[in-house]
Image 1 (cartoon, rainbow, N blue to C red):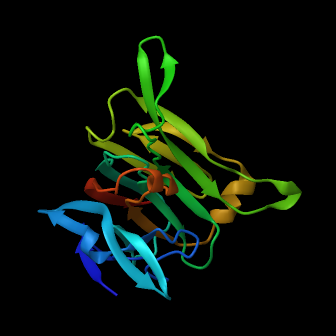
Image 2 (cartoon, one colour):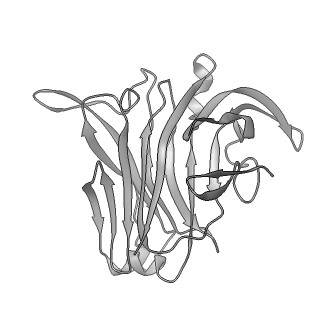
Length: 231
């Protein structure tokens, strides 16, 4: 199990439970896909076949999982998303004790064109989007909370660094983009699921299953920093 130091924290270069997820056997968490340029983190995605339990997994991806157990506070990264087809970068966290709950500060899904969910959202042009998501499982009365798209700007996030953030407190969850609140959750049925727990922070670059119909993927997510302010 490889460990690194970055931004004053200790990180694993894999999930705390292993090097691949059996539900997505197209990628594994490859320590060699985690690189640095000075103090800038580079998470790569590239062909690097490895066999786990007799299964060939073709793509190695960069993922780091912090060993610190985080409580309430503000979480922020400054990142440039990968430029490629069917990419799947993410900044997220889940409970140290169990899954769910999980908060996805963002998940980006580029399409065959390489664009992140471009859409004609205004008269002046196209806007790109990422999703935030809250995984809770089922609550009483079949209450569930799912993904929400955030239409954020016209300049591709693979060409520009942006800030992606989360404020998590005892009474609310806020998702931020460049210090602007784009989603706010105060519903007690949701907030109560995150009360009294500690969260595990994860950053990763990955690929969607659709890549199988394209050329071999090779791209990178670049992260200038990770910041945490305790509340």
